[in-house]
Amino acid sequence: MKRIIYVIVLLVLGLNVSAQTADKSKAGRNYVIGFYNLENLFDIYDDPAKNDEEFLPDGKNKWTEAKYTKKLHNMATVIKAMADANGRYHTILGVSEIENRLVLEDLVSQPEIADANYQIVHYDGPDRRGVDVALLYKPEQFTYLDSESIPFTFDSDIEFSMDKAGQDDFRTRDILMVHGLIDGEHFAFYVAHLPSRIGGKGGDLRSRGGEIIYNHAMGMMEKYPGIKIAAMGDMNDNPTDDSMAVYLHGKENVDEVTDKDFFSPFLSMYKAGFGSLAYRGEWSIYDLILVNSNLLNAPDGGLKIRPVNKKGHYGVIFKRPFMTVQKGQYKGTPFRTFSGGAFIGGYSDHYPTYIVISK
Image (cartoon, rainbow, N blue to C red; front, side, top):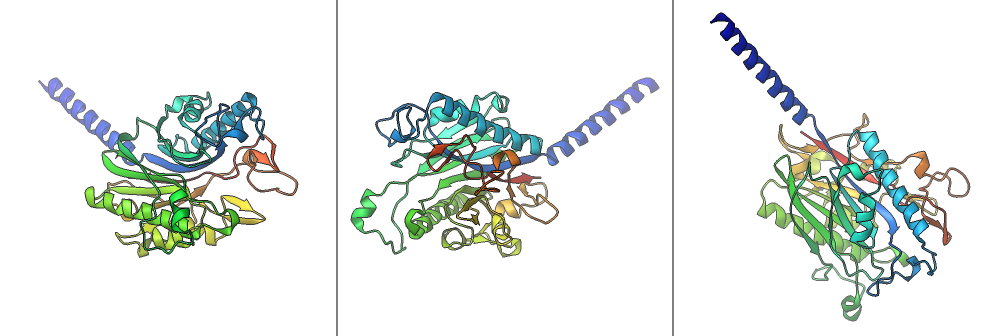
């Protein structure tokens, strides 16, 4: 009888230890949420519905299968390098400047990252260049529920420089929203590539883009109380610009953020001189991730954004020597795919960015 009681005690203790270990393991699990502008990831096939002529074997860029294969390898190498640095693959990776679903299928099947088992959320958008945004996710960590491709509209109080005819003819990337669960908690992820700065224009258009994300996010918070939201993308604006600071309500300091605001972790980093891309010697952070108050101020036991270094930064701009020009006029800047119209075999003209969340 004593022996039986002894065995039962051992079993109970063992179960308790196992449960505690599992709880600690779950509590200490980190999830990486990131964004990467893949810089013109086009396939080599002609799509009559898109202006992809430059990225054909006989086009301006002589976009051959060998160059396309090199590009895929380079993008996968960066994603794998981030996984090695973090000890895990991204749970969520938003991407931009991709032509279609095919290039993403080719990317996630690259040998460097095939074991990540990334799943794809993508919609064909109206952009005339033919580039879209998309989201990659690990199904073991993120349960997909639904998604939406949100069109760019001019239904706003913003005073646009573009007249009505111009507005009717305007085409840009849709904003992707993906809704799902991480550890049973509701999340919404927005992936954007806001209108270009070419010609020094488009500030009002990017402000409208920020407004579209914000309004949709507020609607999601009303529909799903407590939902945690991250808005990411190549915003073509710095975190101090109106699109992010005013229309997306991005705040620099944690104690400023209300339930009607977003926390902007890269804002303080931008002010401190960090950059994710360089143009004419000036660094910017266009590759932004902002989070709502539910993800910033979650109670104990809930998933929340965490500082990533001793300086208290909540964001990471990921760069390595192989992703960076090592000599010449552009030394120290991202090692891009093309330079001066010539293929140089680099990675992207943007560094990827990410945040880390955990319980």
